[in-house]
Image: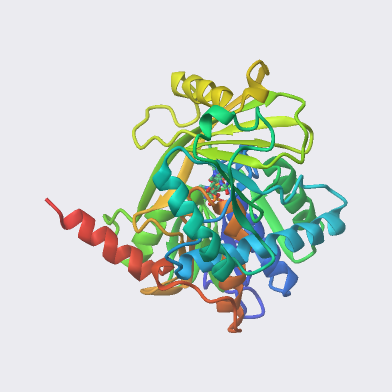
Length: 393
Ligand SMILES: Cc1cc2nc3c(=O)[nH]c(=O)nc-3n(C[C@H](O)[C@H](O)[C@H](O)COP(=O)(O)OP(=O)(O)OC[C@H]3O[C@@H](n4cnc5c(N)ncnc54)[C@H](O)[C@@H]3O)c2cc1C
């Protein structure tokens, strides 16, 4: 891997694209790059999928359809396309990913919430189009999914939301990548620094890896590398928000819609296991340990959906989500180092958008037309917001 001048024997960069981090972001990016014929080296500090992407939620939920903007449009298009993306991956690998567009139920607890929901029927029609619906009913179809007591003002049923199995999708992406001749996967190898002028990645084994482009898809750790490449190492471009989740053995029907209320979401996987998420903790000591906050979440979920009131807990999990300072995902080149690309900060929606984020970066690398990237995703937008936040007393 070492090359003193940053080039291999033929004078070319040894990898068109070095992808740092093998979570959902890095895996989609590596696959999309390999599909267009780029040579890819994927570097993972630990094992594939052991970071924030190693959980079991897999909810794919849209933003609400009012006050439409570039970010909502980006996510909407990503959620629409993901169905075909997953189907293609499943047919390439023969591995099911547990994807299903089950829709979502949102119980309404006040007259005001009902009024807003009724307005959103038209907003959804305008912004989501005729393929997906957003309806308001007076009561849930099933008395225990969610409890009728939780829906005194009715219930929204939208048909855009979906779910998948994160471990199954990660396994399918990893299997596909392993089968491609233009992809090299290095696990237990970390990026330690970037010499962007010489286009060399410094690695934890002491070697240097030349690159055409390098993409920072390394979750919460990406922000520090991006700030460094941007020339403002102290700037806090993003951070970690811990989340805890649980898995229950409920034997529930796999076609039940997701239920979401007040930060609690409940979804049924293809195998009948029910996943519950998630806490959002800015302050924590142990990133990967679960605690009393998860017990509280489970209690709330059991009340919300009595179908799972006695279901035994078979899994508890916690990790930290990457959240950019500017709140939106961070996507695109670092202005001061244009061969260094950021792909981070998907926060709570990475499983729904990572494939589209990847398309944007591949278009950048290959100098082709890709999906539009909202201005708020650009590194410079995040840097400006982070600088403002740090300047506040
Ligand atoms: C409890 C919980 C529930 C969630 N539920 C959902 C959900 O329902 N739907 C959804 O879409 N999202 C959900 N999320 C968010 C989602 O899991 C994350 O946004 C997503 O996993 C982030 O993916 P990533 O690839 O950016 O980061 P990660 O998965 O963290 O991957 C980054 C990888 O980079 C590696 N790495 C770090 N530093 C280096 C380095 N220097 N060199 C090499 N490798 C490095 C890490 O080891 C890691 O494997 C949830 C998160 C949590 C915690």
